[in-house]
Image (cartoon, rainbow, N blue to C red; front, side):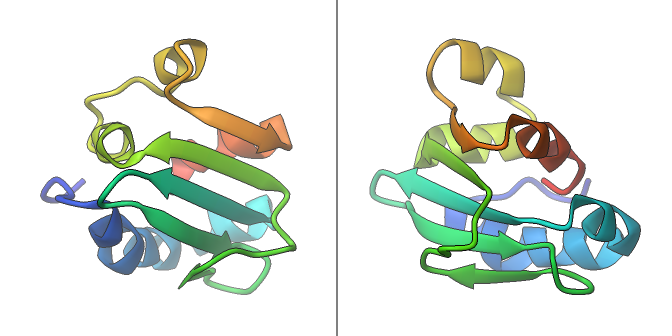
Length: 111
């Protein structure tokens, strides 16, 4: 991975679109919509649509989401930068998943 992400916005505006474009086969296999609800001053709501070729990232919520991820802004940035283990974050309540748990496991491939 390149330089570490600095903010949640950085993840969804720069990092994630690049990862989706670099892995079209992974996007096609996932074939679902994710919803990210990130709390805190640097947070917000974004959806990642892997049902379209190449995937798309947009701000706001998606009614089509089959997996919703909720975290604080700090924890999310640490997770993407590899400083926070996803399993440990989930077990300790820092990472909350709603919906399809199988999709949540596949998320690591595009984050």
